[in-house]
Image 1 (cartoon, rainbow, N blue to C red):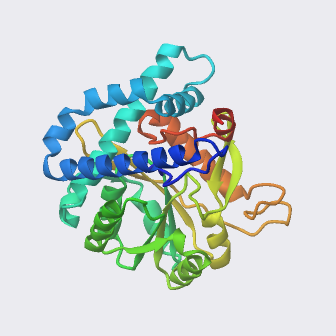
Image 2: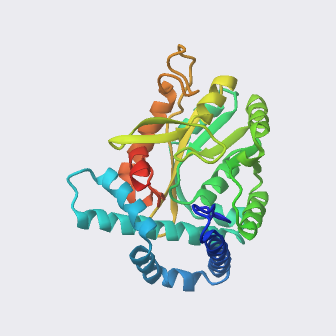
Length: 329
């Protein structure tokens, strides 16, 4: 979810207090609408789904930041030869998919693990999961902001008997965070908030050494994470270096798993072959030195393949590539 700052620093003495009050008012309004949306998605999902077209059209028309972000990502996926009409069409589809994902989150708050797992249409590549777990060195599952994360977690919990740890960043909206934490408790997964600093990474290292599983979204660098720039969609994207670092420290393989929404609202899971992480020379590492680690480049290539295959389901509504982030400033 997009963060909304609680206050603004005045650029000049005059008007600073007015800007601070305006920022607080926006934050309060955003908190109100987020609570209202997820409450409606949980208790009146039909009405929320019926409003999708009108709300998405209105948001795209009225929000400069939404148009800028979704258009930038659409241009990257479609390439320089795409027309403005094609770019806008994909941008609107991305926004619609983002809305559907928010509806899924709201519906998931009151769902059981069995109800979530029932939405899985198929799992492709389960043999890759079995091969990765056979090593007995723990497992690092990397996924992307696609499809339904909650349904994917239910499927993983159904498949896995060891502890599962989800790496995330606490949301500023307390009610949303309470509901999400309650859902994870019902799914039987452990929370690993990056807000806790370096101690959480020590706990995750110990979990991998105990042959447990950690899950994180690897297509975006969260606050509190370190990222490295890698080639992506004709430009550069910063991807989290944490999975490669933990793999180097523990010997655990990295397993890409993607959740893709089908036309009838089900979810299809794709399990890719594991990425084996080997030590390299000092000039190529996952610590921000001369070159990205080959394993990080391999993950970026897999991620790019899925983004190109399912561009409307990559739920990035802000500019994703470094060049576009810089241009938007």
